[in-house]
Amino acid sequence: MVVHADGVEGLRAGGPNTDLMGLLAGHGVRFVVYEDTLRSRSLSEKDFPGYGEVVGSAIVELIVKQAGGWYYIRS
Image (tube, rainbow, N blue to C red):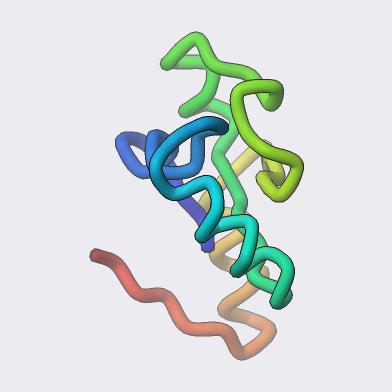
């Protein structure tokens, strides 16, 4: 799951979704956060549990995944 903008709030450590996201991560779900979003919100990797991964570009991550057969679902 690649998140940016307001989506990062749902992944922050100590939030209401922390346990659920940890459970999903334990089953192989990856949670990817866009570096520019963190910077624009004065956040860092330390604001997220260990299952969160920071990438330089969300669009590059999405393109790579789609090229590998993954689907893009925007909500």
